[in-house]
Amino acid sequence: MSRIVPNIDTIEQHLQCLTSDPERYRPERCYHCGYGKLWGHGYYLRQPDRGFDGDGSLNPVPIPRFICTHPDCGRTCSRLPQCISPRRWYLWAVQQKVLLGLLCGLSLNHLSNLLLPARSTLKRWWQWLSQRSKQFQFCLVTTFPELLCYSQWSDYWREGMTRYSLSRLMLTLDRQEIAVP
Image 1 (tube, rainbow, N blue to C red):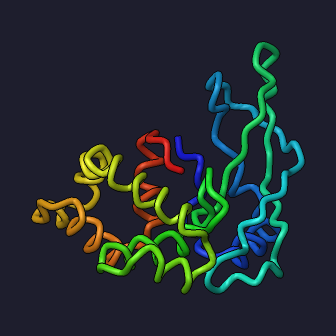
Image 2 (cartoon, rainbow, N blue to C red; image 1 turned 45 degrees about the vertical axis):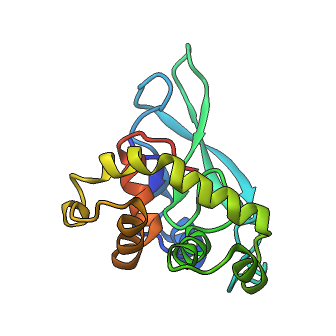
Image 3 (cartoon, helix red, strand yellow; image 1 turned 135 degrees about the vertical axis):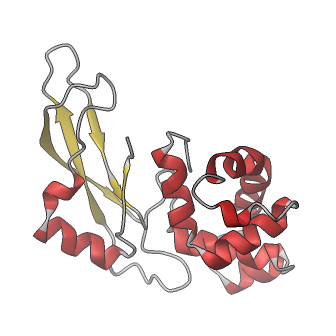
């Protein structure tokens, strides 16, 4: 069961969807106990509007929360739009620009001067991708078989992020219950 709501590619789309179709965010069942009854439980705020084209004007962004009504559970959960990374402060689009820049040979210093994230953040993203690449590639192969012809991990990701958005690749992993940052 995916914790990411697909086809919401921008913060603006997310805000519009919260107004026009909030039920789209409600999970089918509780992630913890599997029970099917979840009630709206307010929201929490995220600050994802930062990076190369985010000026912070959309912050904070509400993320809907839900609570399980099963008497033995009562835990809460939330679902994010596809554009927002579950465990990072930057949108997938910012991360994709950074990673593609590194895959194309740009330096960490150049990218940190060009984009908002600090050099240490960019380095952490690069290490995350290189360390998890084999697992991610293995899980992505059924959805994106055309990428099989790339034997080097860097070629795989350069081509993958050229053809598809990083958010789509990570959504695919999330649907397979692989933890994405």
